[in-house]
Image 1 (cartoon, one colour):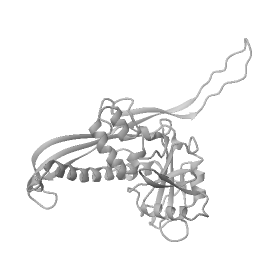
Image 2 (tube, rainbow, N blue to C red; image 1 turned 135 degrees about the horizontal axis):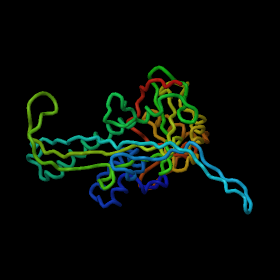
Image 3 (tube, one colour; image 1 turned 60 degrees about the vertical axis):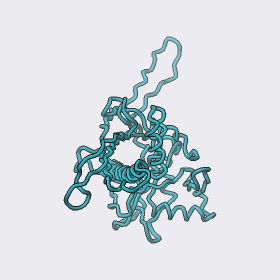
Image 4 (cartoon, rainbow, N blue to C red; image 1 turned 90 degrees about the vertical axis):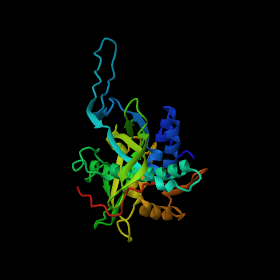
Amino acid sequence: MGVIVNNQNLTWAETARREGFDDAAAVLGELGQINEFIDEVPWYPSTHGIYNKQLQAKRLGKGAFSKAYAAITAIASQADLITEPVKMYEGDSQVDERVFRGVQDAYKVRDSEDAMNLEGLTQDWNTQLVYNNEGDYPDSFKSITRRRNKLVAGRTWTAGGSGGDTSSILLFEFSKRGFYLTYPQDAAVGLVNEDRGRHLVPIPVGTGSMWAWCRHYEIWAAMVLRDDRALQRIANIETAGASNIFSPATFIKAKNYLPMVGQNAVAFANRTLKAQIDNDAYAKANVWFSVVELEGYGPITRIAGIPLRMMEALIDTEATVAA
């Protein structure tokens, strides 16, 4: 796959490969082609096992001009200590043993079924990452939209839409100084995969049981904002009509509030908004947009130089975000 941003070598699959989990890396590499957020977000070991601590700067210290025998100025910065728990999201992939009867390669069939279940698991995990309410589900993490649920200058922006047919664009600056995910130290990178053998389990729909081969999946992750400006949300974007739709001007304002004004930045939109922006990009008069062809991947739309990728989890029916 072509390199989109500089942090590509820190993604889930590559981190797994560096840690020696080659089989997991192969699976995660395929997932990254389906789930573009997984393909982009960097991962690092947590600082304290099942939770991560980091300082979030509030004020930077400064020095002063001086001379010999003069007092030395103390450089005193101020920061908040932020603790983020590493949360577990899990599920069992259950494949009815009758699926294997009459097939030539039962292992390939099982892998295919497990791959579909794993794709569903990661897509829902991504949805929880964006929309989950930790008040309703205390075992989960605080989601992205819960962190950006009010209009705040320099963090959450509005396109002016309302009425329940709106969506958002999420803009991240991925780096260890910006936004990243963590996994427990001395553990598999993010994803745990364990074959648990043959079990009698309830059927998926209705009543009764079936014999199934079970594979257990766990995703361990904490969301870390080392710099609070590294996550920008452009909300209240109308998904239809001609007013209060996506505006490059608002996007550029948000881009310039990122800590490094867009270095290692990636934007995410759902299929509806991405299609609208792709159409704008192919109109040559729109100087804010460009389309870059990446070998082995395909065309990528850029807005003011920042790649726009698809996030299936974002919906077209978000509640209006207000101040």
